[in-house]
Amino acid sequence: METVTLYRPIGLKEFILIAAADFKSFPPRLSWQPIFYPVLNQAYAEQIAFEWNIHDEASGYCGIVTRFSISKSFIEKYEPQNVGSTNHDELWIPAEELEVFNQHIQGKIEVVSTFLGEKFVTPEDPVLAEMIISNSREHQI
Image 1 (tube, one colour):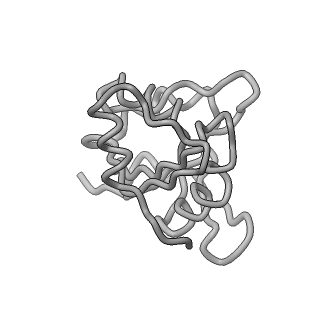
Image 2 (spheres, rainbow, N blue to C red):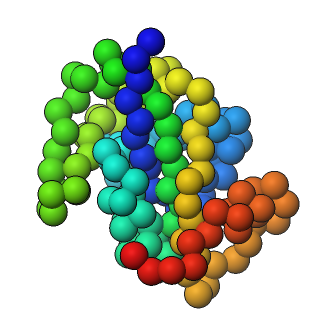
C-alpha cells in the first residue's frame, strides 16, 4: 500500500491523549474545533509548534511535531490548502471524518521534534517526559 507522510503540530494535552491510544490515532476534536488539520511538511509543523504552541497555556507551553503515514488512496480526496507562505500547506479534515481518517493511519504516530516554552512543566509519566525531552530542539527556527 502506498502511503503519504503527514505532520501534525500538537500541544501536551493532545500528546497525552495520543499516547493513551498507543500512538495509533488522534483524539476527537473539541466542540469548537470543526477541522483537523495535518500539514504537508515538517518545516511548517515546526514553525507552528515553535511560534504558537510554546506560548500557549492550553498547549502546556510545549510544541510537539508528530509524523505519521496514511494511505495515499484515502488522503487523495482532500485538497491541499495553502494558508500563507509557499510551504504553508495543510489538509482540512472535517471533525466528523477524523475517526475514519484515524483508521487509515499506517503504523504509529511518531514524535520528530519538540519545542519547550519557559513555562513548560515536564509530565509526570517518565516515558512521555523522555520522549519530549529527547526530541527537544534548542535552536530557533
